[in-house]
Image (cartoon, rainbow, N blue to C red; front, side):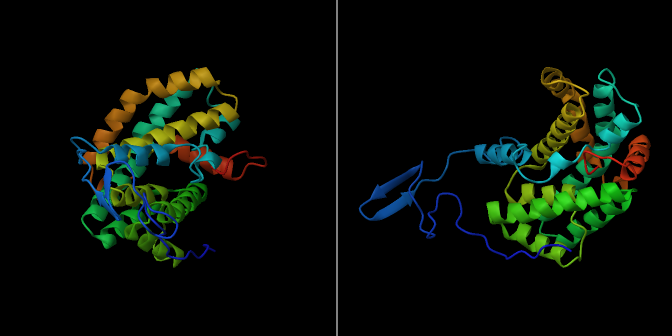
Length: 275
């Protein structure tokens, strides 16, 4: 059962607990009045505001409790089958990006982001349902919805945006699946992060989570993991641009080996990760 959540937004940035605005950078006071000066920062894809960058950094931080830490993204299944080693690990990451996460989750994120910005919640729901249907294994479906629900629950409290809270309420009522990619698309759109930056952030979060799983599975060390994350950057860039060009009918992964390994992992006697 999904946990019920109260629709509370709380005070926004720069406010005290009582809801009274507190002076911050870019404000000037005159007597008992506080006047805020308009921030001189660019917005949009051409020059995203620093605030948008900070949102992206927060959401991709491994300390953000979205549940990614519990996932190996089928890597544990590959390791159990001895189908990956330290030398082939970077190639597996790039393959999962290009043929798995990119055509499926990254594309769904971009579509959900656009629909949220345009105020079309039913279009967001269609993307969510389509992405959920493309995930063949129970393990992958469960991982996607558990992390998505957790992200919406926390993001509604952290950012206080009505779009996030409204969709989380629909997930609680089981009207929509609440996959992680769609939850991320809603969150990034509601906080004003441009779509290209949003897709890039989520893909990097996937790569970092994959590298973290590889560390725990002893398939790499900390130094080689960082080398791998840097080396995969061009593939991330290509995957972002491809995701931005796709439509709903294109959503779906073709990483069939990952589906097979996930199915085996689901029935394994001992597991370190949930996927």
